[in-house]
Each structure stands twice: as structure tokens, then as C-alpha cells.
Length: 347
Image 1: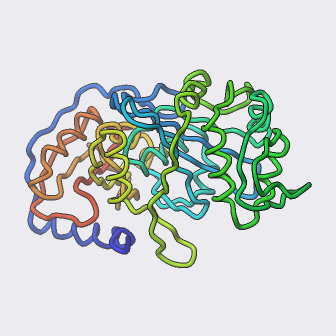
Image 2: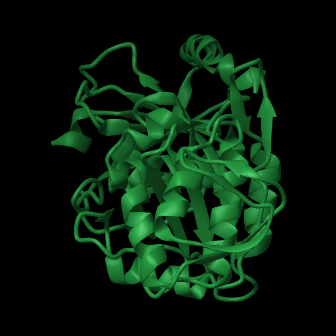
């Protein structure tokens, strides 16, 4: 994690070394750019074994986030995310959970897809009111509370009870310093006996309400997976990527994502996110997202940071649809590929 935080410095040093040692071009091309699958557009293709949902609930003391997985083989799972978690949002850099939750729903999906290193097919952003309506439509939420939990109106638990929609809202809204525990209890109970529909309101922000409801139904009996994290200081909690990648690879049959650095050399807003939408489904994760030293880059460059990564650079070039592929003799301990996005990408 400390190496990640030194990424900008390392990148500058590597850039100087590259200029000194030289790079050699191994291929280029300027084909038509496929349509962007960013805000308001269809999602890019997803590996057949990947079936993931990004879920967000707003209205409590802190936004609640989770990733739900329904693999084509094996048991479903859900992974509640800590409210302290910080992830790399392509185009914005390191972003805390509250910042991720403040994004539009499809951008929230990009942030969590980048965290997972796998494209998340669907997303839903609900309010506590929406969640309560879903619980009431399903006849209540059966829970087994390990202790008593103070809410805004009463103490719930300990023991077995069936919470109404209003009690679920009060249960989550009344959290003080136990957000994660209450969120995990609610998710586990909801997925143990899925409601007829999670998305019951036309006001819910989602890419596909029917698909979201189908995924929640398909996640019946889901096992909770703890999100592997590492604490850098008193306030910063980051994903423990090697452990996370191994966990999701085992569950979904996915490959371990290749780390990539994205630099905006065009000056256009939204470039980092648009690039991520294309390269995450191709097996990459943006580990560092920053502006280039200049905003007048005409041609997109895809640089393999070491000869061993030339094929991966070609894969990114194919995913982007444009770019000149080069290979540097200088490896990087931050990312295997560096993309300097030019104006040809945003044209």
C-alpha cells in the first residue's frame, strides 16, 4: 500500500528513465473507436462466469455498499464493504466509500468494478424507504439478532424476530459505530429469504430492475465474504488486493487483474472512467489515475512497463480501439501498463 502511495513519484522517476533509455514501438493502429459504455450506455461484455451486482443503500448515518455474486457454478455470496474503505476511482484517484456513494449509480459501479478487478454487470441504488417497502412487500424480514440494538424508536433483539419495513429502516438508521454489523445482518437476512422484489419503486436508480431482482433471487442463501482490507493509518482502509483477487478468482473463475496506470493527456473530463469501462472487462485494474504532465497529447500511447508485458499492452490497445503500443526496458512496481490518453480517444 505504501508503494501505491508512492506511485506518482515512481511514475515520474520511471518517465525520466524511459526518456533516457528509450522505448521501442512494437505496433500501432487507428481503427474506429467502439462506442463508450459509460454513463447512459450499455455495459461492456462480461466474462460468462461473472455475475455481480453492486448494491447501495442511502439514508442512514453513512452510505451502505455491497457486492453480491451469483456465479454460474458454486454458491452465491455477498461482500459488505466497510464505510471506512477507500478505493481507486478511475479519473478521480483514491476515493473514500462516501465519495463513491455520492457518484451516479453507473459511476459507483465503475469504482466497485475496478476494486474487484471484474466488471460488475448490474447496480442498484436504493433509499432506506425503498428497502423498507421491499421488506414489507415480502412480509417482513426474519432476523436472529445476537444482542439488543438501539434504534430511533426502540431496542430490537436479542433473539429471533420478524422486522417490518419501518423497523429495518430504524435498525439501519440508528447505527452509531456498528454500521458494518447491522448492514451484514440485514443483507444476510434479506438474501436468506429474498423478497419478491428488491427494486419496487420506479425511483430506484438502476441499470435494469428486472435483472437486479433476478440476481437477488438467485443469491438466496448467499454466504458472507469478508472484504480483505489493510489499515494504513487511523482513517485510511484500503483493499488487500492479492487476497481479494484470490478470493474472487476462486469464486468466479476469473483471472487476476493486471495493474494499469492511466494518465489523462487530453485534458477532457471523464477520461479515466471511460478508459476503465473498456479495460476492466478485458482483465485490468486501474491502480493509479492521474493527469499527464501535458494536456496536448494527440495520440494515445499504451506503454508496456517491461518486455514481459507487451502482450498485455496489445490487449489494452484492442480494448481501447486506438493507440500506439510501445515497450519500455524499465519495469514499474506500480503498474504493468501505462496508458497516456490522447485526443484521438476523446474525438
